[in-house]
Image (cartoon, rainbow, N blue to C red; front, side, top):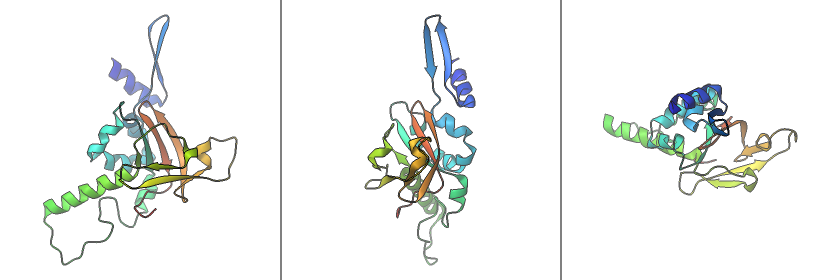
Length: 185
C-alpha cells in the first residue's frame, strides 16, 4: 500500500498526505528517483545515472544529495557525449569490446559524479560545494535578478550555467541546468 501511495505522490509531483487516524497526518515526499522518472527534460541524465551504481543515491533516504541535472538539450549539444573519452582515442590503439565498455562505464560514472553534491539541503549562499569527484567543486555565483523570485533563479553555476528549475524530494533536491558540468568548468 505504501509503495502505491509513493507512486501516486510522484505522479502528482506533490507531497501525498496519508492519514492513519483522525489526529495523525503523515506527509510523504517522492524520492529523487520518482521525480526524475517524470522529468522529461532531464531524461538523458537520468538514463546515464541509472547505468551506474550511483543510482542508489536516487532512492537512499540515508544519503541526501543535491543533483545538478542538465537538460536533454544541453547534453545533446556536447561535442563529446558522456560515455565517450574527453579526448578521442588514437585511431592506432586497438581496444576490444570489453575494454571499450569498461571505458564507457568509467566515463559515465565520472560524468554523473560531477553532477552530484553529496549533501542536501545546501545553502547556495555559501557558494562552493564538493561533488562526488574528488577535488572537484561547483560554485554558485549570485547574479542580479528579480528579487520576488526564489534565490536559485539569481545564481550561475561555475559562472556560466543557469539554473532553470528546482524540485525537492524526501532524499534531496535537484536543480535543472541549461548546461553540463565538465572537468574544466
